[in-house]
Length: 239
Image (cartoon, rainbow, N blue to C red):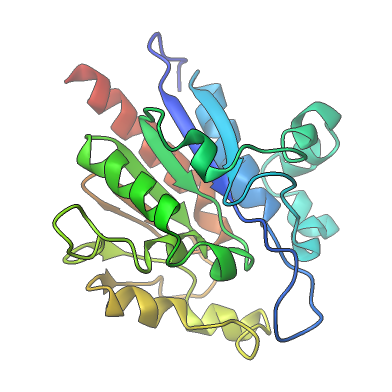
């Protein structure tokens, strides 16, 4: 995939939640869902900014730093790169970047998002304004939690009539987090009026593209979401 002559401005949003409210588990951003997306967009020549819901430090889910997981893609290279990891130490908040124009916004996952992404007025407004201005909105794994409570300017749910995916309940059980998540993501997406689908096998790649809305089911889907966003940005520039 060649580098573009026309870099797009792409915003990546991460969680600030470091732990579950009901259990002692640590949580946060699933690092690979950031790095896999970042690498594909950076390789294509786009300009990337990492922000978080409330700004400041982005905590990392320790499970996402386990040796075999880090080996997927080039996540281990990014984790060992102090300059890259420094981007997560003092991020701008959603409010800080809300008034800027973004060609695409990407919602990185990790269980932390289940606590600070839903029903967040500034985050919801940013996603809506991006879509209504002709931009692309993408999310992976638990990132679609940001759509819960998001309303278009006419008051209807952002997801009404849309096709999406996201972390499945079977995957939640496999991860051993079904007792500590604050809600079922798949059900919440359906309650917003979306048609939710998932891969036949848990933890296999699944990307759903519905116009300028792109969602991926799990960590294995982050690179696929990124490639779809690159394709849509090319199309966007041609118009």
